[in-house]
Amino acid sequence: MSFAIKKDGDIVVVDVEGQLIVGNRQELKQKVLDELERGERKFLVDFSRTGYIDSSGLGVLVSLSKKIREQGGELRLADLNDDLKTLFELTKLDTLFQISDTREMALQSF
Amino acid sequence: MSFAIKKDGDIVVVDVEGQLIVGNRQELKQKVLDELERGERKFLVDFSRTGYIDSSGLGVLVSLSKKIREQGGELRLADLNDDLKTLFELTKLDTLFQISDTREMALQSF
Amino acid sequence: MQSSPPTAPPLRKLRVALEVEIPSDVRYIEQVVEVIARQCRQLAYNRRQTTLNVPVALTEALSNAILRGNEEKPAKHVQVRCDVDSDRLVVEVVDEGTGFDLNGCMEDPTLPENIVREDGRGLYLMSRLMDSVERFSNHGNVVRMTLRRHD
Amino acid sequence: MQSSPPTAPPLRKLRVALEVEIPSDVRYIEQVVEVIARQCRQLAYNRRQTTLNVPVALTEALSNAILRGNEEKPAKHVQVRCDVDSDRLVVEVVDEGTGFDLNGCMEDPTLPENIVREDGRGLYLMSRLMDSVERFSNHGNVVRMTLRRHD
Ligand SMILES: Nc1ncnc2c1ncn2[C@@H]1O[C@H](COP(=O)(O)OP(=O)(O)O)[C@@H](O)[C@H]1O
Ligand SMILES: Nc1ncnc2c1ncn2[C@@H]1O[C@H](COP(=O)(O)OP(=O)(O)O)[C@@H](O)[C@H]1O
Figure (cartoon, rainbow over the protein chains, first blue to last red):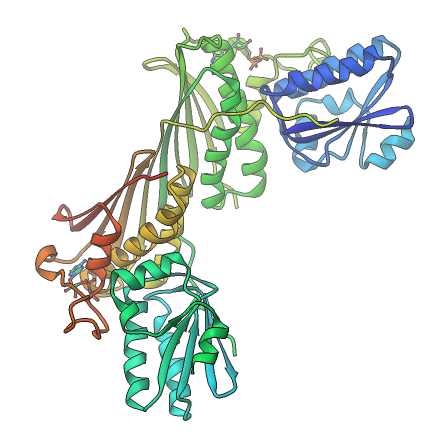
């Protein structure tokens, strides 16, 4: 599992490769907070290469979203597979996040 | 697992794909005997795509070799991986068969 | 000429019991999950069960055992026992903590007052992703989860 | 920017017990072998053990149980019990036959008078590929094979 961070225009895009779980969520959190600190405000997490997410991974997304919003920015999500969609629906987090089907659609949505 | 039979000049080449074991050795035996019946005399079994062989698979090779020899022909073997070499050594069947490292070498040996 | 092998009917009556003990370290979670998910795949549990239900519920139970039950103390261990056949999976996660009140600790994270919380979704997800979740004490604090196989 | 994950040490203290029952039909052998070889791979038995020793010895034991012990009678079944951890693999193959004298039936197939025989290499290969082979009766004829793990 790893996190690849790229810039696309003024949007910070994070690819979550493998699992986003208790063992590595802190790493994601820190990377995104570093970018926020540097002045970035638009964030997109791409889940096309993600396995499963646990409650602490979901929790990190919630807390990052809050911190980014506090700075006037936004965190959006893209390309959730059916399993991940189910997780967001079960937890109703699909109501908290703007979720796009594809990375391209998400990039254009900002 | 399956057996693919091809002709290369006057040599019948049998590729053993997957296992050669009690569940399928009869099929190999029948295919080779059919060719022998048709008048073929030179046979090469290529093990480059073979998994493992059990005692009944070894037994079929021994019995085919005998039957082919009785008709003035020969059965040779090629491209045994380390596991298969060990099996032939353990059973001393490496003394009974002419075994070549590659199919090409075996084809030229006839 | 190409021959097709005699078709082998799938194995029924396969049953696997698995035991593994890990230190109180969350880095072990993924491997334990993979070992158990693999057993389920081998028994033809459906794709979603082996990629969502089992991995997520088991990750929750393991991280609770490590972080809550054992408080990540290096001297404490987590034991996992799994018994799986073509009917159902039973997994028990045992920690060295004093236990907890499963129903009392389970909150509904979908309520408006909880939705923006960072924590509190673990037990809820376990109960939604498994057919049953029980807790009892037996040489430690045991969380037992059961999932019936679906095609 | 690319991050590397926190490294997870390999699982020790993993132990798998497996039971499977098959009809007296040799077509089931390959699947049983694969299921058990997979457990050995997961426990880091070396390549040769998982591609040669275990598959061949187990195939011999299973085919003897099906063909000799049960004489391929459809009403009879073969039970396989496997217990494997990072030290050793123990496999028991149980048939419904009357048993046999392991040492009496074991011949040396490498002797000049045996080398051209079609049969008689099964028990020999089992004994050469496993650390031990035993036979006893316990609700059927049991052949137990043990193999110590090598890296
Ligand atoms: N194995 C355990 N040992 C002790 N307490 C536990 C255990 N599992 C869960 N709990 C308690 O239940 C609470 C809710 O757990 P959970 O729903 O997983 O959310 P979270 O772990 O994010 O707080 C935990 O905060 C903890 O108090
Ligand atoms: N499970 C079994 N039940 C009864 N007899 C057996 C069993 N396994 C082996 N035997 C006896 O041992 C003999 C030698 O077995 P083996 O070395 O595997 O050679 P093969 O099966 O080719 O004869 C068999 O012919 C059979 O008489």
